[in-house]
Image (cartoon, rainbow, N blue to C red; front, side, top):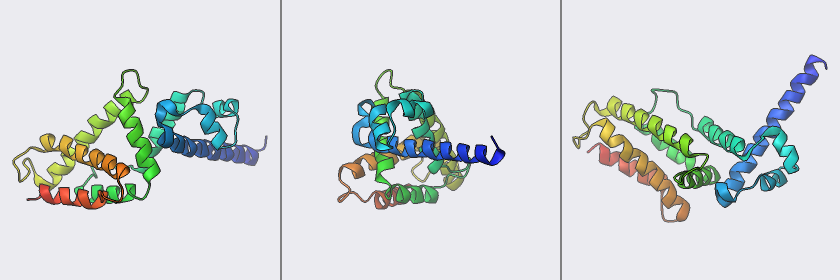
Length: 190
């Protein structure tokens, strides 16, 4: 096979994988991970289930791809978290409810024993709390105005971020997720 043909075949394969991941995001957002089936994802992209298995051999492999893709979209370089960047990320999330819904559905389900995303979320939260502590330390030093250390405040900041997402998903007309997060940041500075 000529080099150009190999490159176009690889590009088509990568495009198809991305299309499958987007479809999986939608199906998981609608049905949750346990309710999502490979058949439903395959149907959404016009493949047979066997065809989908060519790209993702298991449902768990597809889940990992979905979670990695979401992280890639939200990537902030290490050591670059700042409260103002977080506020921008919250605004960005408000423009993509399907991603937020998928993440929230997987997060909620992952607390059950044996869920394939449990380890991912456990590790992710360890990393996110550490990043939040460093971001708070960069702004406030070793003590926030309230007297809390950055390590004590970091889990609270993460809880506010995730809690706002759930409230917004349930009642987007009543909950201004970006505005509420900016309000929370103003509380930190007082």
